[in-house]
Amino acid sequence: MKKLIVLLSVLGMLSCTRNMGLERTFQRTGVNRAELEKVLRHYEGDGRKHRAALFLLERMVDCYGYDNARIDSMKRLKYLSSLSGRE
Image (tube, rainbow, N blue to C red; front, top):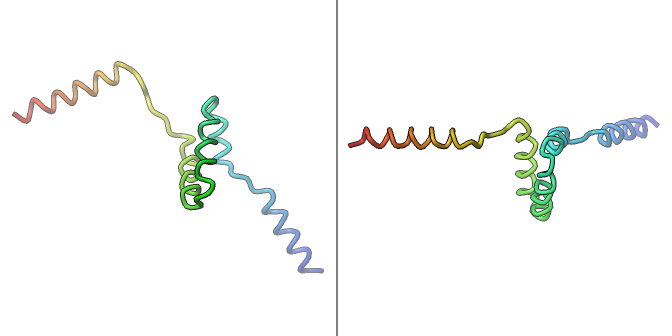
């Protein structure tokens, strides 16, 4: 009887666990969610690559970047200024 209770407790705990990092990533991606799910489906057959994709997707929730013409022009100026010092 005691073994049955322990087994049911363990199964209950395992059934309640969810991948919250992945859920948060999916919530924040909006229209790109389908693309991320497509990546996971692509690697379903290869366990190692699938785990790697999950690892990256779980942790990308707080990652972002900027895309702006002003930023690009500043990067270009920085690059050009570094070239002039090499002469």
